[in-house]
Amino acid sequence: MLEFRVKNNYPPGGRFFYEVPETKTFFSSSAGRQDLLDKIRQHYAVNRLRAPENLAALVDDFICRHVPDGFCDGDDDGKPRSPFRNLTFWQVEKKTRAAMVGRRLTAPDEAEKRAAICLSCSLHVRNMCTSCNGLLAVVKALVGSQVTNIASFVGACGATGCLVAAISHLAEPKVCYEGSLPTGCWLAREDGTHG
Image (cartoon, rainbow, N blue to C red):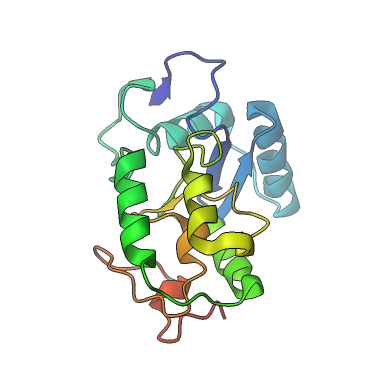
């Protein structure tokens, strides 16, 4: 099992996160590890499921599979790591700018709904802080005053390599992506709507 090299550190991106395997429900917290664990345990209880005794270790292992190499140590037990965990600022900025050039924007409420879908996606890359590394400024430069309320909470799309806060605004979201899109992805819909 993988674990943080420095136990009390926050993960890259400043949020703890976990997907409950039994319900496929995604949780995150910028308030800390304990806040996230409390949310997850409550979710297990509400769904009449027994929370694993090693939940804290499972959360750390899950995070370690989604953050850049070097943040964690341990044995990966042969389980796969996210192929997107090492996306860099420069890759994301370049792909986002290329996807947005000359494109029309959709209504802000539609962009907000799309970004909310991305928050719970398994391909949502959460290993970078969009406000502290300047990526949110890139979004503002591309979409102007239409920046969504959750722009600072979303990261990059692992399928497109673009910033979610930017591509969620595309009126015609024919963005280049690698591989298949997950079930429920708004990009997979012909018209790009969230519903």
